[in-house]
Length: 135
Figure 1 (cartoon, helix red, strand yellow):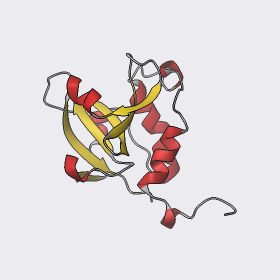
Figure 2 (cartoon, helix red, strand yellow):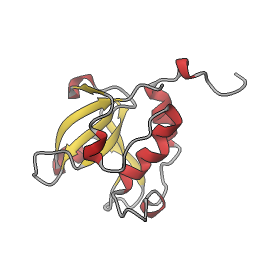
Figure 3 (cartoon, helix red, strand yellow):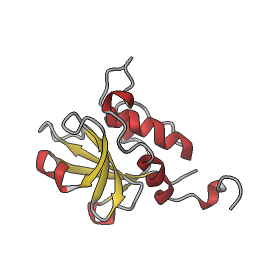
Figure 4 (cartoon, one colour):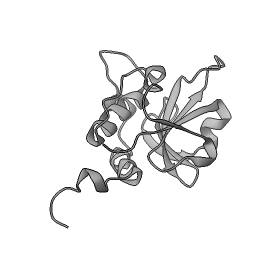
C-alpha cells in the first residue's frame, strides 16, 4: 500500500504499532526532562499526537480525554491507568497492547518494554481504562 493510511482507517492496533516502535528505548530517552515526569507519560506524548491527540503531561489530567472503558473491555491502544501509590487515584499510565499485555516505561526495566499487565497489577490497582480513537 503506498502512502500513509487515511485517518478513517487507523485503529488502536496502529497506536500499539507506533508504541512498539519505541520498545527497547532507554527510559531516559522518553522523558520530558524539563518537566521531570514519568517516562510513560512522555511515551504517550510521542505516540498519541500521531493519531490526533495532544495529551497533557500529567496522567491525572489525561483522564479528561477519551471514553472510559472497563478492564474487561480494554482493546489494543487503550490507555490503562493504575494507582501505584495507594492514593486511590491513577498515578501511572500504560498502553494496552492486547492479550493482557501493556507497553510501559518504568525505572525497574529502565527502558520501554512490553509485559504482562499482571506486572502492574502487582504494584498497583487498575483504576480506569480510556479509549482514544484516532481522529
